[in-house]
Amino acid sequence: MHSSTSLMLRRFCTLGAGGAASSPIKKKQLVFLGSPQVSASVLDTLFNASSAPDSLFEVAAVVTQPPSGRDMGRKVMPSPVAQHALDRGFPSDLIFTPVRAGEEAFLSELRSLEPELCITAFYGNILPSKFLKIPPLVLPRDKEVFQNQTHETFAYSFAQAVYTMYVSGSEMLSRFEMARQVAAEEAQQKREAIKEAEEATRRAEELSKQETDYLAQIETLERRLERVKRRVAEEVKKARDQGIRDFLDGNAGDEWLKKRTDDGLEIYELSFAKAKEMRPLPVDRSSRGLSSGDLFGRGVGTVNIHPSLLPLYRGAAPVQRALQDGVKETGVSLAFTVRALDAGPVIARETIKVNDHIKAPELLDLLFGLGSKLLIRELPSIIDGSARSKLETQDDSKASLAPKINPEESWLSFDQEASVLHNKVRAFAGWPGTRARVAALDKKSGQQNVLELKVITSRVCGSDNSQGGEADNVIFSRGSLVFPYGGSTALEVSEIKENLECESCLIDSSELNSANVLRRKITKDDAIFL
Image 1 (cartoon, rainbow, N blue to C red):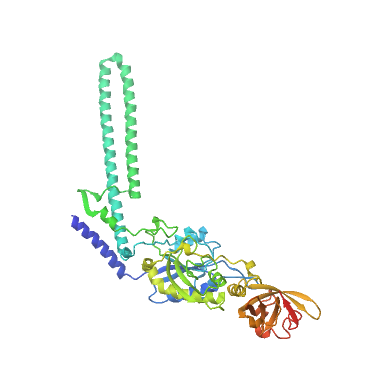
Image 2: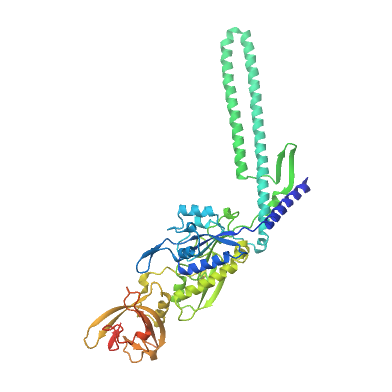
């Protein structure tokens, strides 16, 4: 009996595994979240990869920011990601634009798609816990045990289901047996009471003068019988309800799997202790926001492409803050998303060197292009779960933050070093830009105009470029404006906008010495000072 039962369980597992291998592989349902143009390049890479014959996934939905006013005309337009998805022929009803990612209507639609993996790339919205549970993330601790996780999890799930069904069913039957015993005892009491009633009736007939008293006793006993009946019914109902609850809750107090049959009680060889050895791997508690309830989730989790070497520069503006700090090296990280800000375990990283002239938009493009390739390289291991065996937990003690940029930060303060201002120009290029106020003094008329300039391109130059100028004067040198500083450096500005409301009045270094450029405001005869 025991060996045949164990063989039956092994055959069941083998058949299950064989059936899965022979059937066509079902592609994982992937949801992409992103908004700006750099995110659209990642989406394009995913579209291309998903169309391959051997692709393991398909893009099931796109989530992006709602349409907003862009450009000078403030025409309401879809986000670059939404527009790119439409241009690629992606169904518009599968492009979601919630104001907040926690909206119940949006989450309900997302759940209906049953996504198994989410990819985020500069989405721009905070993802709440209830989003991160669609799909849930499972993180194992033990690398060696993880290699057999798929088979062990299946075996344990099967054993656990059998154990819960039969052991709890046996307990329920045991409770029913107890209820029947109680009912039998109450029935015996009822029979005894009836006998007493019959004896009392006979005595009443014999003793006619006590007839009234005996009739009263009979009525009392009948009421007692009714109470007994009600108690029996209540106990039976209570036992049945408790048994059902125990069955649904999966309570187990026995060592062995049990099953009651018509032939009696059969005891299977597979013990609960053995089933415990096959249990799934525990949740890594260092990954915030997860619970043991996620263990049997069908999803892979949410993976974020973050343009920094995590745990450095966690936050909304990692590229801008890195350039502002003048870093010589940065990179891109693939990390699972948890509730804490950019604090999930890292799957992989790529590192690049940073030169002194690259600006934020260029570096963003470069990092997300690198991140797209990294994602496609790692996706197979993310999907089959093997990536989780090489996860790197972030060291929070080494973390730095990259807070969102405030437009008021865009003003240049000329009491700072030239290198600080140059890094700010690079970091804030694109948006919000960097602005400076200078005064133009016409020596002939004595008239002074205060100008607001948007600095587009700059570099730190040596003191020889600023020779001939007074301490606070801005001078022309080799087609550029040079802001001198004490010491051996100066800030050379080669590209500016003079009218901040005009998008078409870009002035490059070749025009700075022209007689028609900024006439009556900045000329070679003007003294320009801070």
